[in-house]
Image (cartoon, rainbow, N blue to C red):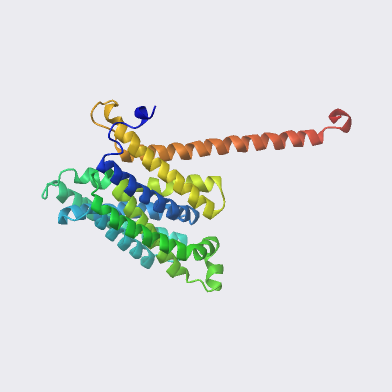
Length: 306
């Protein structure tokens, strides 16, 4: 039975082991940060930081360093710029995000052009945009864990202030919460999560791992702590199952090519969210029918009801 699920050499492969460990760490960090990203309505900021990370990843190939450090450098720089330019109101944050995003996309277009023409770096564009988790070096695991711990520490320190500022920034400020500093700290944690996700499934698709499991979890529970645990489980399942399916897909059509991990992870995240939406719709429909039946029954004369 198991031999039909796990192809020969799956657990013995060094590439698979590295992919599972890096992907697992990235999934947990993205899920925890993603829950507050969804609750605070900053999904656009997360998407923008993912695009900004493209600049760092493509620049890293030009100077021949690990794309991880390029992703992290530019997402953190972009997060700082967005917070410094933006104002407290949501409209001001969106304007600041759009300005920083436009500039970074222009630079990334230049870097990707140089990668493919002057530097002639083979596969740079695909690796930066869509990831290549099976080619990650085992030496990358240590910095991934270090930055993941930093992001999680930030989230632990900011947990209660984030809840207060998410409900009402003005009330939080009146209670002495440093709203601007909390926002900057959260953007730093978000930038790290996006940068780590980009190394696993690419800069373009990293938002799916950040938002998808978190959005699914928030639909299932209103408690942030439970949502983070649930989102972590969903993210882990999507990444690990994506790695397994990609490894097994070597014999799928078209044969002897294999399907990309990034596509499979995003597809699994989408299926989980879609299933949650369908289930929620069915439950809402049942509640509406029950309320309608109860209302009609209460309007009938006592003789008819008896």
